[in-house]
Length: 615
Ligand code: M6R
Image (cartoon, rainbow, N blue to C red; front, side, top):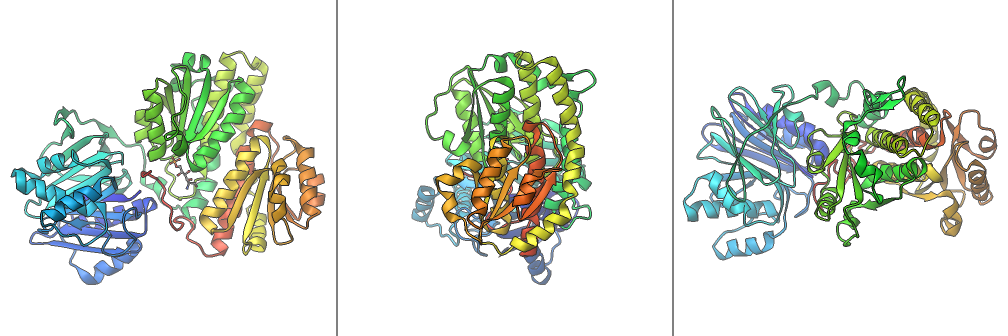
């Protein structure tokens, strides 16, 4: 939920850490800070606000020389966002400096204990407690920093990715992780530390991803030694070659990452099925599924756990799996699932969906399901992420980095992967005919082009956005496969424009939300020809007769909705279960344009973070 960056080597640490923070700002952006050792003393600066504010402050405040440094961009958990609560945090002696992503849950008793031992605290944070605990252990036990970190961490409960160094020994940084990601970039006599690999892409393609419960002392001119925090055993470092490139994480001429990512969807969907869907041969090949197909075929039911947009993709998948593969599916919020003692057994298959692969609630749900003997399959976007490693098997979405906090291409590529899985399972279970299977593959192959067509409505959507940008509320309605798309459309509007929006199954409207309808209420209705069209048209009539304003998402050539609606946005025709891949596009663009017209921070909406690594 925060971004951490560090550097130790022969280059100037300042630009590396600062640029790294800019790339990690999607993880949190309510305050930022940096600490550097310039050869003589420890220099630091921290501030409420964004990395750009920190940069401004740094220009006037400190010299920025030095080859060791750490930085942090924060999403507040303990203590309001202000200068004092910003990271880095220092130990009482001023020797140790730390950055931390995560939550130390038992920080209160630890803090009390330290206060009793004479320690004082400037901030309200759990992190300041941790750095003083490390200092206390170091002094009491007379051990080196690495050992002190290990002993201290064994006294904590919670989650962390930390980087800490001692200004008296500025040739090493100690790092550790539990529940929050931490990557180490390995260069020639230099190391980069970060929450993900984006801060060091231009310097090295070699990365080590620490596993949960591991720590390392990173020293220049030394090989990295990784240890288990709880028992001190050594672990062989696994150096992975990064596939990401710089271009993928830059805006490429678009005003915002969100817009770039919306427009990337045709390619992203192609990348998702490339090599997996062999249309000419009428085959799907997915090792993650094929190697475990018996688990899926014999599954008593499929459970899907996820959060936010990924949960919406799970709901779409529920409809698709049940329609095609005739297997019962239940979709759960990971955060609820993990705390309600769910009935799970070894005949259940659990699919966990997560763009980041780091969401704490989803991770906890996975662990619970594994403990109870279920087979756990992951659908993640970030390669090498914690969830992709924790699951028994999985399939990547291959959408490329998604930087905008509002998920767009992650959603459509998740649906694409889940559709491939449903189709493969339906075929293996003999639930669909060979000719239907072939037709479905052909239609899925045509989707990227149809998404491109849907994107052509951008200008019309911008005009509609202008009409409704000052709305206070908005309803989104859809039925069947498009009910979850209505939920997703509402979420997109809420999170980036701060307009209250709700998604409903269209028919459910008459059971309550209809009371809200008046001439001020825009209602976005997904009314594609395939998908209970007549019923949805009746729902539209109910809204019209109460003076509501209709924005219809319709199939090209539609007549009936056009006659009723105030505005229509067309999407190409496709088979019903693939319509979410098209109907979601105008909803993404509508929320994008409204947010831009309202001058909101589209890529970094208030209070949000891209990857939610806290409960
Ligand atoms: O990385 P994940 O897919 O696990 O993230 C889940 C949610 O936090 C995420 O989808 C969130 O709802 C997005 N901001 C929605 O746009």
